[in-house]
Amino acid sequence: SVTLLASPAAFYEALLEGARGSRRRVNLAALYLGTGELERALANELVATARGGVGRAPARVSVLLDRNRACRTEASGLCSVDLLVPLVRLGAEAGGGAEVRLFRAPALRGAALLLPPR
Image 1: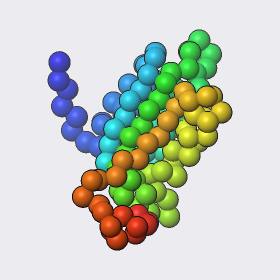
Image 2: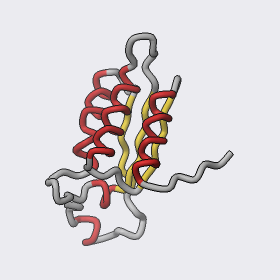
Image 3: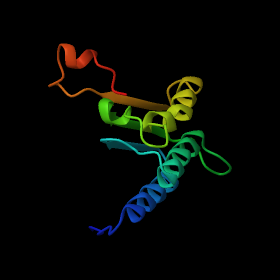
């Protein structure tokens, strides 16, 4: 079935519910995550999902974001990757149970590739 999500808040709530309800894994691929309250709640839930908890086994969490967009600093002074640092650390501690990957658009070559995304 298909559910129409009418707002960004509804979209993030659906993502939160999906992460909370996961038993084995969460795969999230996006252009970027953002740095607002909704995005912070999602990042925190992804960490909680990867850790597991009372009556909940740890799940494998994998996030794939566009390198240029995810590393772009927003008005808050943060970027999407900053919110995911706890997930990266957890993945390193837990032996790979969580991962954050950044993809690079193939059109970026030469000098454009050398420019920092921030």
